[in-house]
Amino acid sequence: MPLTLALFQQVSLIAPLANAVAIPLVTFVVVPLALAGVVVPADLPWQIAHAVLSALMRLLELFADAPGAVWQQHAPSVPALVAAGVGVIWLAAPRGTPLRALGALWLVPLFLVRPVPPAAERFA
Image 1 (cartoon, rainbow, N blue to C red):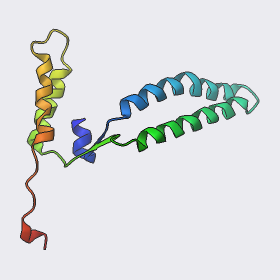
Image 2: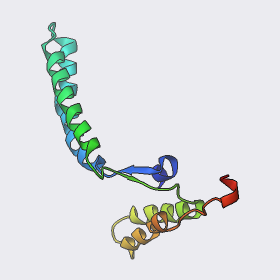
Image 3: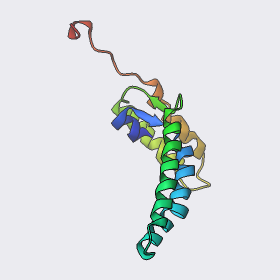
């Protein structure tokens, strides 16, 4: 998340739900059908895979159009990114690491530290 904010100034909030739907469907339905289409001398497996992918794309478009699906904000400062990196590493530490949950506090500067606005005369 910190790098996504730094590079794109937005984070998808709906991505976990979209991935929870799309990954199993593609893995267990679309890919086997596509592979079957290579072996079977008929177009039916590819047509079914296409139909499944088309339905999945319509669903993903609904997810993307949902209000609040994306968090947008300013580009975080370098110190805020460093703090967030420490927090992510601390949160990803092995189970049993002391105070591991406090790594989430290191993410707070991403949202609270605001860049200095440009001077009024620079906008003229």
